[in-house]
Amino acid sequence: MLEKVQIVDRIEVVESGVVQVRIKTAIMEDGEQISGTFHRHVVAPGDDYSNEDAKVQAICSAVHTAGVIAAYQAKQGI
Image (tube, rainbow, N blue to C red; front, side):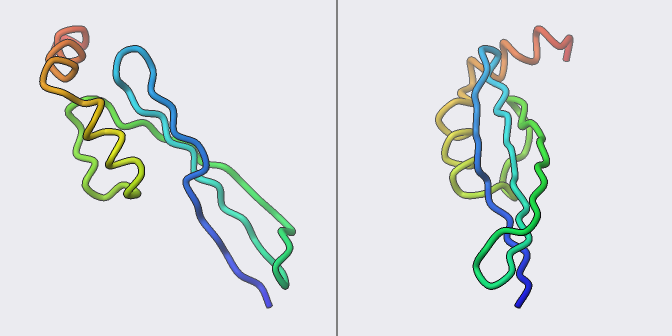
């Protein structure tokens, strides 16, 4: 039986407060991975992260303080 499994397998926070997220997509056959790919995206301070994985939401909630958001936006010229 083939199954497609997606998991957030890496979450990194960089100095600016940007949260980098890596999602692994694995194709499984009878419980054994036969193929896999990765997709990366970022969540910048001030971005809406309500549709992210619960672990990503928890990290963004802790990291994206008002001060971090203001500093990031000032650096971006927003």
